[in-house]
Length: 339
Image (cartoon, rainbow, N blue to C red):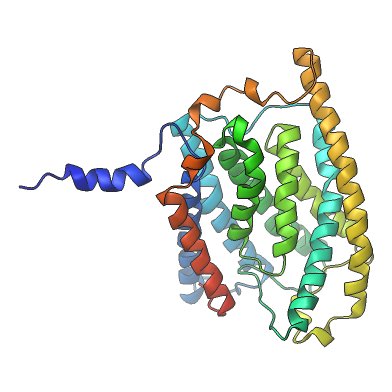
């Protein structure tokens, strides 16, 4: 009888929870969870179990909650339980959280501006509209409908994104490698989004959320920033809006006001980002100065450093499989195939 141990080692070594932990391992779980959620949602909607469409507010909200739970929340619960990582961070004061929330203003401006400009240029080159993998449309403007939209398109995804990308993956990168997180986390965040029109804005958002996570020192900073972005989108309604993709066929369908109003918004967002960067850094330094008697970053004082591996160890089999799965989703999206 053949020895099963070589086969067991072949599957166990790439996919078992690594010790010490690395950041790339988690992304495979996000990919598999997303695949399971999409397959399950397709079965539910195609079987006639649900009476609403996938692009309705309720249908899109259901799929979003399912994807967030399976792809982001479950790994963020079970992996730290096995590794002993503290992914939530520490409380550093209400001032930092308030500033994180207010920094949602430039996040909204940059996302709306880039979406309008990028969509215009994409269509101007003769391309067709590429809808996000998950989107909803409704003409209902009631308060109940608006509340449901905010819950499903902002609060639920923001919680999953903050816990997974800025909790689990952030904690899987050693403190002396944290600067590299400004590259890897935004890339994985954009890959997970499956949202082509917002891709440039999401990239900038991902980088900014790394900064917010660093200065707030907990996952609630990024969460409040994303929530604040949605709140400011309501406040600035009519001043600068995101173009409705369902109304576009060619670039001529897009009013020029969307394009030209986005240019000043980019300038304003740059100024606001510089302001909040300065303020958040001051809060960060003041907090550690009060505790340790000196200013500056105190990443080296965190207790989880010895539980994670060097940055390069994150490039492993599990990470590449997760990236391949999401690239497949992107190909399906561009071809108009929706699971």
